[in-house]
Image 1: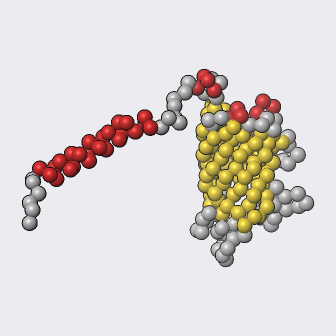
Image 2 (image 1 turned 90 degrees about the horizontal axis):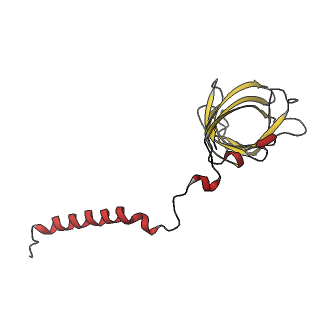
Image 3 (image 1 turned 120 degrees about the vertical axis):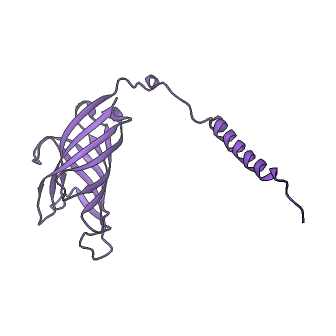
Length: 193
């Protein structure tokens, strides 16, 4: 039986460490599709923090609902686990539907919890008023419906909200337990350029 010299395992370990170190040092040189940029080239100026307060109207009933069920719950869960609703909800300045509309919340929400009413919210606040017309803020997060205040992250945006980050706080203003229609106050805190 052949004997392995005692230095062989040490040589193999050192070779592996050297190989990994070489990969780590030279790793970025193989990625010609990535480069650093000066933010001024994209027209990005000073970052600012803005606060928006809007009312989100989830209308399930009537001749023109803004929220429709696209996937029914697949079980008999009391939380309606699995339910998905597509939304095109009005965003207004005041809690009344007659208040001035400044945008729409477009996206979906899904019942993602089997134990409580915990929704997965994925929506864009698409603004239609003033200098923000055409700009969006994207919200993605968990909405625990029966909590007094729910916080969800702002994960991005478009137009004047490019590179946006921040959070929203949602507070239920009104809910009709018979119809399911609801009005929710959203306070949006967003960093943007």
